[in-house]
Image (cartoon, rainbow, N blue to C red; front, side, top):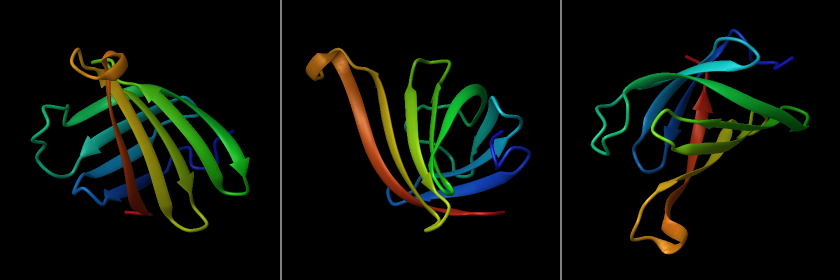
Length: 109
């Protein structure tokens, strides 16, 4: 069982993105942008996610958004940090996939 099920976190990324993530169950999360998005992404979406505890309070979390964006995170609740890798279809990119690697801080709302 995911330790943070029925809990919420706020993720504040270095690039200015700010999201609230609500872990609705062991398999469903809802993310909500807390700032207006300029990248065309959704303001809120509910997704099925996968998680794996890698070490005490360190989790790998992954989901695929409706538009096909793949989000993979390492959540370190010991340091209250997150590393996120996102990838999406992009015809002019190498392998036809665009990507973003982003670091952020985690806090509880």
